[in-house]
Image (cartoon, rainbow, N blue to C red; front, side, top):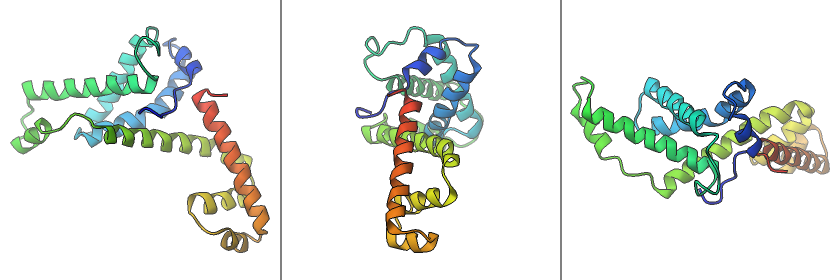
Length: 199
């Protein structure tokens, strides 16, 4: 996670107040899908993955006031995923000591054989985080643009269609498509920076 963006510091300050529902809603909207997918990728069932998310957020709530980028050696997200990984390992240890009566010893062997997360796994988590950031930013800025402007951006930047093709489909000039794409990209970058707390 070396080149990953940092979590907005103002959000970290706001979640120190356990009663700040808006901050916690924003925080969980950003991180719950990532932690949940991590848990599911490691073999947890839906209910267990949801429980893990709650355990992680409970741990964050208890430690948010004490977290410091200097003291913990890195970005908040790295710390958060260490917490998730440790809780996940605790879950597997508990399962090993208190196995459920599934009748399937193959599943236990699968859990025991899980390697420690490698850099490429954490890169996948980072990629998922970036997709979630994009999704949040896109959802936020799309209403700010006309349908044709958004479609010009979406079809060229996301779908990879050619400018000439999109211009013909939308009844725009190629120059207008380039301008639309540029305007939306600039606004998306700005929104991502706002979400992350970078100015």
